[in-house]
Image (cartoon, rainbow, N blue to C red):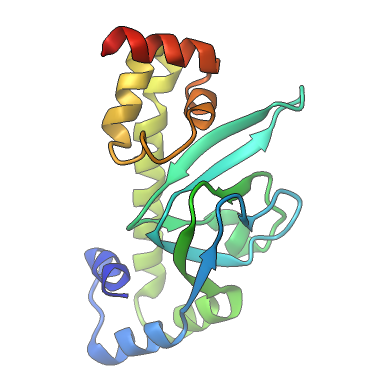
Length: 189
């Protein structure tokens, strides 16, 4: 819980009473590897803060191939905020890559926080902006760089993930085949 509060306090001030209220609205859930936090075709149920584990955002392209779009690990929020806030059907899956422990807010509790804590909307907007900026910074190099440079950028952006997630997910995220990834990894050792 402390990690969650420390992250939130980076975006504004909360007094002790507000922190206690916020913590009264959160619950801890566990997800086993391969479980879904959110599924395409369904409205996201939670805003989640990752205590332990790794999630990935993924979807199926027009050929039916599974594409990994993004990873979220400890100390970060995992949610499609726009879909959650508007209660719109998600277009991606959010899947546990490892066993995970998360703190979650359901829509009712998230709205109660917004309606009770003065300044929460601005804090929330700043949190979302930070998440989007980080995602863009991590995804941008994937557009213009060669595969080796993309892999090295991945290691730099996600230093704690390379030994925790299947290489097939890494290859999908990088937009290359698993064989190409194996060749790249051999060549840079």
